[in-house]
Length: 371
Length: 241
Image 1: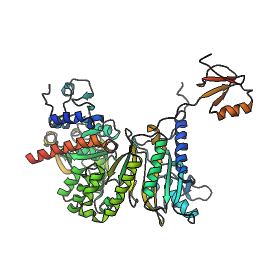
Image 2: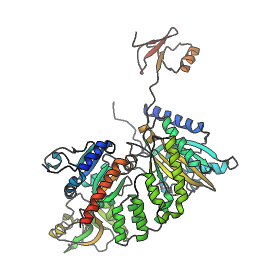
Image 3: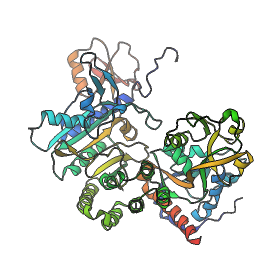
Image 4: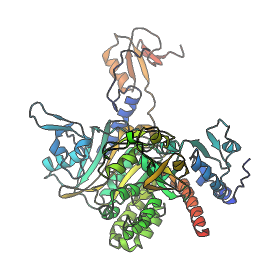
């Protein structure tokens, strides 16, 4: 194969070919089918919006994080979406404000990001997800169960559901130096202690952060200790809600590993309640994330998944059975064969090619191997 | 031969068959910090294969007495990279390197409380006129730590031009490359031997246990077992002192 004359694509973009594309497509179709089977209705916002509407939401990407250009017609700045969730919230407000609640919406589509890091090199990926807008306290359990069911259907195994309570730490974040925020994000207890000693960090806040960093890994034990800490005496309702969600998930999806992270803020800046990250064992990237947030004036809750990261841990479906057929085959017969699940390959050369194991002749199916 | 003894608790755990099912690779840095870590093997109950202590061995991946627990020895700056990409799930690294990388993929849950030193700026005791800066702006600074160096000077409103070197930083001012360096200072002997004096401490440094972020969450039992083990040893040392 010659490497000359191949096109160099921009950094973070790639051509996808078989079998990866077929696998990805199948996962997409199966996941969306699961979402819609729970009555989540598909919506499709456009790839581009004017910059101001794309960046309007409080948790929207920053303008330096999205691809932007001037619209040659309106001369206004247009941005390519970096997240579909926010578009869905806008769409619901613009078009579905009179629809009955809870509003159950599902979506999929490509998003672009400027950032290209060694750990996350791709700048284009397929985002798919579901949002429940205007629901009640059952919303978290429902969207999580639907998402876990969808992941199960496409063969993603060893899922870890990492719960996050971003509102707890958020109270303190605004009052600590930026350097302390970085140290906290790295769960760097040693440096937090050092900063308390050096009076760079308020010792009262520092002690609470230290307490959070040293909570036991088992979520039930961590919640137990949390509910006895006076700094969190107003949060018992939240803890109770999380306990109830975890117990429901434990019985509906017993093979999912549950964990609790009380420090995480990344991607959860504007989540207003229980949030979560989804991981798969043995994979260094997250499958997706979600949580409770405020959709304009209504409470909302959702999950969004990254298709690229689902490919690693899912099982590709078994290869299709292919049948070689002559060009003059009767089309009615062809229709029946395809209905029987055959992938038909036109060829007048009666030999095994394109991974074909069988051929069709005189109204019957023959095997290349047995003849 | 290392002559290290195996402490019984690890074997008890191993027999239970749950915790040590998770394969773990731990990255140990080459050099001073890595040698300092050798004292930790006995209290941890880890006995590396003999090749680990043999400076002439070409091996890079080492078995230990614990099934599924292996060690790699890599350059100190590479420890973070191996752990961030989950090539290794645990590692030992100085807080200087942790701060330089500032990687969201790596957690540092335990201060191992050894390998103490400082990251500091240093200059020649007797400045060479041709490289002495007329003002700080645009000042050239040689360092292995371009990010921390820039952040330090930016916080003071100074644009500096950072020259990335990978070693023998102390040589740079003497040879007229730059008036200032940012480097680790232990005893200060190396600085003195090269006619340098340290000016300002940027960061107090000690060794840290680092853990891959996702492993920390998804293989939590095994990793928290080791994190707890490291904490116990640190606490036991603190009580002795």
